[in-house]
Image (cartoon, rainbow, N blue to C red; front, side, top):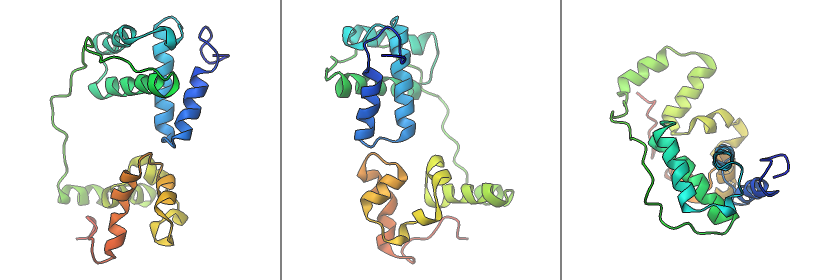
Amino acid sequence: MNGEMGGARPGVLTVARERMRTLHMAYRTEQAYLQWMRRYIVFHHRRHPGELGAAEVEAFLTHLAVLRKVSASTQNQALQAILFLYRQVLRQELPWLENVTRANRPRRLPVVLSRGEVQRLLGELRGTPWLVASLLYGSGLRLTEALRLRVKDLLASGYDIRTVQELLGHSDIKTTMIYTHVLQKGARGVRSPLDI
C-alpha cells in the first residue's frame, strides 16, 4: 500500500477511500472504516486482505471483544468496515461469520431527560453552547451536523432533497427525508420541543 500499510499490495486503502467517496458516505464513517481496515491488516501482520478470509475476520473480531474489550457497537463498526472492504473493494463475499465471540452489550438503559430537565440544562448554557445544544434538542440533528450547519444551509432556501442530503452528509436519502418531512407541514404543523 505504498506508504499506507507497508507490506500489503499498493492501493487497497486508496481504493476503499475512493469507493466510499463515490458512494457519498459521511466523512467520519470513511475515517472510521479506514482505521478499522488498517487495524485488521496490521493485526494479520500486514498480509493483503485478499489472502485472508472468514477465519481471519473472526479472529480479529474475537480479539477486539476478548482482549481489547470493546463495546458491542465498536465491534459491529469494525465488522461493517471489514465487510465493506471485502464486498465493495475486493469484490468478495465472506461466508457467514459464526465463530465470533460477541462483545458484551451494555446492561444499563440510556438516560432520557424529561422536558423540565432539558429546560434546566439549557438554562445553564449561554452563547454558542446554548445554540448548539438547542439545535440538537429541537431539531434532532447529530452533533457534527449541528457544528457544520451554516445559515445558508437552512432548508427554507428552496434546496432540493439531494442538495440537503449532501449538506447533511447522509449516505441514504431516506435519512434526509426523515429530517425534511416537517418542511411539508408548514410552520404551524410541527411544534418545536423547545416551545414551552
